[in-house]
Image (cartoon, rainbow, N blue to C red; front, top):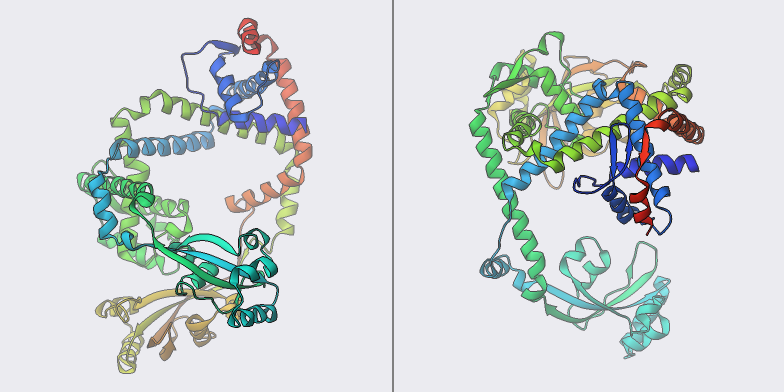
Length: 558
């Protein structure tokens, strides 16, 4: 436990905002210094400081500096992984500061607030006071319902029979509820379907009990009660608008241009994308997709940007507009905005410098722990054994890719099928047609595995069934298809490729990350103990370089 506390404290201290420079030096560890303010700030964050334990609080700071010294001695401050991680941290911080500079302080007048209050319809926003009687079964609810029909008083029945005792004591009163809460609560949705004085039919909640709900009172939510929320909303929107304009201006300034031919290659590779990540061929990597004033982005860099993005932010790999917007936005965010922040001198702010320094130390210490402690337990042999044990998890199943063309008439679909069979490219053909019903893609790429055949539903199940067993290049259609609601159409399907089953190699980063996490968790207690011993070794090694200002420490105790 001591070892666990030590590492937790050290990592936690790295998150402490310790950039004050106008405080006395409390201790030195080699060339590293610990300020009095560092300890005081940690006390406010960790709530552990009390008279007499200042030295105890100081020890994690000393240990942190010892680990930093050792990491530097081993050259970890220059390790490529550390350098790359620190660069990402620095760039993100600079963009955050740039956002603050660009959006600045916003001011919303009382007149603007009142104008928006009426224009947006907030002056008609309702809230309804609810009362309820909660019982355990439908039969009980119906019995109470009958008593109410016979003229029984709702509040009296609530006090006598409701399972919700806090509200029962108030005659079933649950206070006021607002309309937007109905989006997340079936109870509130039921309440807002009632007229004032009306009692609902028995309503079953997610726990299986029943409610009789009464709309006791209705009123409009006043301007004064909505004013704070309204101001926050308008301020947020005003900042968003300023930032959007700034980004648009920078896109114009940097004169982005896309190579149409290379974009076509990327869209072609996107047809066989998995998780939105296009699969490039050897000759694709160096092709320049995007040029801007001062630089460019090749396809290799573009794919790296896609892989780094959260899956939900990745563009549809065959949508040219989405791909171009993503390339421009990510280039601006990850490359150009940090440079613009530097031009404003934001990288020279003391707060930014210290923030990056603290993050660098944290990253270095984590790498030191991994290379000097964890690696003794997470051995090559153990990793390879686990890799074999988890082979199924690292095996990608065979995947079939197929294209689909969707139109609203069978004759049109038959014509498209004939053109595809004659050798025309389906994607090019479908450029001649509008979106289906004005809102659904008229052309798209799909893929499935054997497991998907058992779980797919609706239109996807129909398409999978149609192309199963069809060879590469095979075409099916016209195929009638039922989409959501009353939308019906006709499909032409073409099988594009079948990617064979593949097992990820041992060295794949995804594999190594998964294996390392599992082994580290399995040995977590031994690792913690070993880390404690490692710290003792460092305390001895650097003992002559630890200098504490006893007078400053004594003043803290007082």
